[in-house]
Every structure is written in C-alpha cells, then in structure tokens.
Image (cartoon, rainbow, N blue to C red; front, side):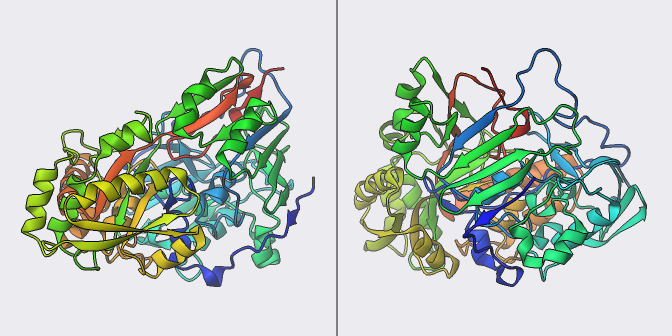
Length: 547
C-alpha cells in the first residue's frame, strides 16, 4: 500500500501559533471552525468498561467493498494530527487515526478506543489506562505503550503543540508495563477523558515520526480504519482500507474518495448526476428540492455548532456591554431564519454550541428595536457610529445575513460598512485582532462537553493567545466559572458553573448570538449508515454501499 501527497506544504511545528487555532473558526460556508473540549469523567473505578462504537463485527447481511465518493468544500492542510486546526484536515484525520477514547454512539460522552479501560485514583489525580493489545498501524508495525507515551507527550508539550492547553494539569505520563499507561495530574480535572479523544492526541508510531520529522504529515500512519493512498492538492484525498485495522469486520468500504468541490452548485449537480455518493454542506435554499428526488436524500443532523457575529470588545464603542446588547436586540433573526435558512436552524440562547449542561430556560435575545434604542441612548454609542463588518468573499449565506444586519442596525443608528475579504485575509486580520466585527462566523466542538470552548471563548487568560477567541472579552467571573467547572468531577458543581456561565455571557454579549445550525448532507439512496458525529466528523468505517 502506498501513500502519496502532491504539492502540499504542511505546517511545521515551529509555526504553531494562535493563527492555527483561528483556522478552526470560519465563515459559515467556508466551514472552518475552532476547537472544542471535554466532558465529565466522574469518579474512580473501572469507568472504561463500555463498548466502543463499531467495535464488533457486523451482523446479518452487509454489503462490503466499493468506493465511497464524498464531495467536500474543504480540503486538508496537513495530515499530521499534531499540526492542523482546519476541519478540512481534522475530519479526515479521525478516519485515519485513533485515540485512547472515542465519542459514543449518541455523542453524549466518550468510551474506550485504544484504551480498553481506565481506573481513576480516589483523589482524581492519577489515571491508569489499560492499552489494547494486538493493534497494528496501517503499515503493519505493532502499536506499543511506547508509541502511546510518545504520542501523549507530543500533545502535552507546549513547545510543540498548539493544543497543550487542553492538558494543563498533566504532570507526567509513563508506561508502567507493556500494557499500562499512567497519567498523573496536579489534581481533579474533569475534561481529561474528553480531551484524550481530540485529534492531536491521536496515537502515532514513534519510530516513524522521529525518522520522518515534519515529513510525517506527507506520509501519515495511524491505527484507524483507513490509510492515505494519495492527496492531490486542490483536487482530492484518496483513502484505502487499512488491512490491519483492529476492529473485526471494519471498515466495510474498500476506498474513500474525497474530491475538493468548493462550489455549492457544483456539488449538487454532481450528486444529482450520480458522480458522487455524498455532498456536504447542502445550501438551505436547495435542501427541499434535492431531498425531493427519488434517488437522493438530505440528512439533517444536529451537531455542536454555534453561528454568530464576532465583535472585537476592545474596539470602541463595542467595549460597552450596552452597545453589544443593543446589537443583539436589533438583529432580526426571524428574517434570517425564514429567508436564508428556510426555518431549519434554531435561535441560539448561548454564545457557544448547544451541548452538555446547556440550559433551555435562558432566553435568546428577542428582536426588540425599542429595547435596542433604549440601550443605545444610555450607552457610549448614543450618537450612532459606523461599524465595519467583515464578510468573506463568495459566501452567499453570509452576504445575505450581512444585508439583513445592515438594514436592522441602521434603525438604531449603526451604519454597517460591509467589507468583503477573502478567507485568508479575514483570518490574518482576526488573528492579529485587526477587525471590528465579523459576519456569521461559527465555532464547532471536537468533544461532547463545553470545557474547551468555554475556556477558549470566555477566559481571556487561557493559554493559546486568542484572548477569548479574538473577541477580547474580559470577565473575571467568566474565568472563575470556567475553572470551577474544570477543576472538579462533581456533576452538580459543573452543571451549576456552566449554567451560570451561560447566563453571564448572554448578559455580557461578547458576540451577537445567531443560531445553532445542523449538518446538511446529500446522500444517494444506496449509501447506508452514514452518520455525522455531533462533534462534526463522520465514522466512515460504518458506511456501506448497496449495489
């Protein structure tokens, strides 16, 4: 089995900066997003006894073989799991690499993967993982505890990993024998099991990474269901079955082809013509028409995603909470829902995705121009002001939203100046805080609990240098609640802290809350068992094609 890259310039470790985290956060339509954190791990004992999704051989009659072709509007930047922050890379990586834990079937928690089970010390400071035996990498070499320790040290190291902030309390990791790995923490840290499922914690072959260095991104080798056959920059990713995969009977497919098709209409034409088996990010305006075809279904799935207007809280008059509240009240979300989203999204009552510990009793901002005007009159923006809003070039949905915002905010004395910019320029400006507002940017979660996103979005001092994910929102109370939730395993304390945080950030309004938005995938009717995990990737090992 060969692997080949064409014309890919991978990121190198020395270039990991806040700009890479920015690549996870993008315009709705360009679909690049941000990291997401952890879920509660509970008390000690044999917590890892649950069954891993897809870990047993399929029963009954299942079609095997074939090539599944899935058109995407994103493509990878790097296929070394320690490096990328873009969803184009990350969601492919999850099908090539495994971690110690994985998301369970309903995306509510994590369950064992390469770790068969784990024990937690009574004080919550020591996690002992029993590592699955007999696992091989896709090149046939055996996976050992040395590979596991090497991979974890790699992501824990702040000098080489942009994701070390996910593991701040870790003091050490070591193998205690040939099947056991021990992680020692400063104290209880609820997100650990969740964070060990994040892509940079993928288990890689120590010898190959040390031998290849940065070139490992061009010759990636994992224990996942598929291996890289070829990546042609600007064209496609070609994956093939990992013949050494450790789950009996998986994957069902022989090959996965992922052509890069950034144009919405082209993806739709390709799935209508049967040129591809799946097309991602179906435009809302075309969902019903495409779903009405006899040979195509559109799958709408809830995922952990929040869409909003990003505001630079350090720019006057956006440093005034009353101004930010006024902008929220002056945003006509119902007009957006009907004319842009065709009723297929939910108004957001939080400034981050709807996930574990989310409270439904917190009210979203209503469209209330009288309330908005009153807030403006008592704010530092009472005389009105001009507001530059960055809109990615070619993003139809965001262009439409920007026009609605422009008309709505004009009624409270805010003159919106739409600034069209290509994605690269927009990212560069955001990463240097050189912006005032951004139209309909979004964030997704890699894990099933809110710790990571809460830290990144609302803790100004969190490692990574993103300063509340480029909003520059500062709140000592928000930082206190984020840390309070992370540094305990008591569910009642975590629930209270995250609920209080939701109320706080909705009141402080560091952003304009828009919507919780779903995944939209067009599928030919012969595609079976395609599913988007709520953390936004797809478990392609389960997919099959009926002949």
